[in-house]
Length: 379
Image (tube, rainbow, N blue to C red; front, side, top):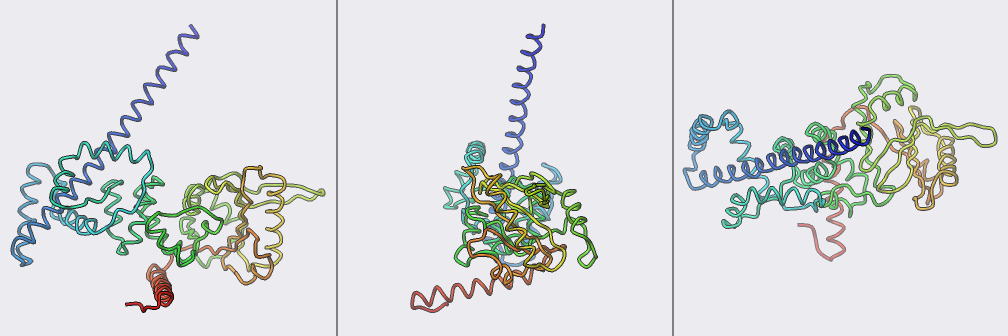
């Protein structure tokens, strides 16, 4: 009897997993087919407007009449507002280049969708239109269409697909200016990689962003709080915190204790990055950063490298998460090859306009430098 129950359990698990996979596949197929359909509807509207009268009244009349007829047959999803969004969708993504290299898993899904949507795609190709390779749901693209910078938009699209961001997570990353914060944390010649490849994790500095934004903790910017209170809020919002930290992060421990020479020490947060294959130690600082703080983190990193790190793992990274990061103090206190960083955190969403301005200035300077090297001038 026991063997029969085990066999039934095994059969049930196999069938249940198959049904779950089928449902996910159907949902993905439906969502992506809808996106391709809306793209084509947007194209039809744009082409009709280009061939018709140039008067604005003509476009309004067409959308109103088209919406009325479509809603009468297909329901509320084809209001004037939605049709305008489809037109905008086509306007944006008919100009957006295909940037990302999708994963094998997503490639398989896309191939399936393309078979179902083959009529739409063949018509696009026949008309000489190279369709963007869509990977997300329509709700995701409604968020992305609000991003004006094409490079930032491409970055968010890649990351949302690769990291399986929900619509809410995508909206949060856009509102927190993740693209600009990452770009300002990198060398100028690495900025374009963000737009073309998304966030890469190849070296310790790739973790950093300016600043880390912790608005989800719900703490007032100027309130008085302790490091313990900050840590408690982070632990209560650990999923959001790991999302803010970036790709590949896993949570291991808080107040991790280690002892030597009968003295005990505690690391505030211990994370692991599976892409970099290393421990990441975080110490929270709500007061002014001191050289003693840096020395303590150096000790934590040394301990992990000597007693916790496995042979196949990379050197441990230490991050002092501070209200105000003093990079000059870090450079003076630690050796140049130290794997330790002081990073600023903010308890509110950054000023997007200011970050965009800084990034434009930085990009302009880089383009001028490149032009000078080539013996030319920036146009």
